[in-house]
Length: 177
Image 1 (tube, helix red, strand yellow):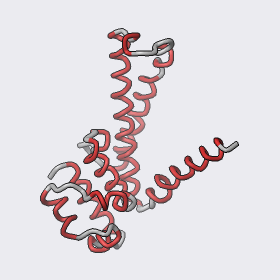
Image 2 (image 1 turned 120 degrees about the vertical axis):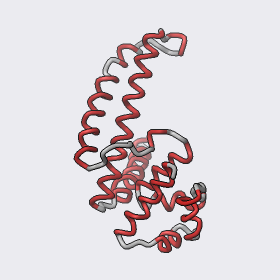
Image 3 (image 1 turned 90 degrees about the vertical axis):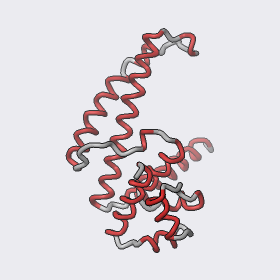
């Protein structure tokens, strides 16, 4: 089973614990239960008409859709101990490493406007910083997912969707001044 199918299957399991069966999810997404079984069992892609509605139900669905659509490893689940305490330790560690990696960038990138301005050493420093940032984001996504899975907090509704709308409203307010 590939990463997308594993995330979708885990999302279904988590929602089942909240009282939502696959048929309820299919009804909400205006899709068939059979199509969801095919995602998990036959490696079929997530139906494009269902993606937004699925993503609104659980962070795992959003990550699976993002992974399927982009292939970016940042959306994959790390393959290690997934106890929430272990995940938190990874979050702290990766945050510190990313922070340390990006601190020299403002000085290094000063007056650099195009690729030709970068020396091979600077390019390697930037690539290293990018890797640390990706690791940091991946673990933070995992932490959000685990909080939702374990504590059923409604993170998608309360944080992920609401904050995006609030940020848009703040931007509109700022631009309209």
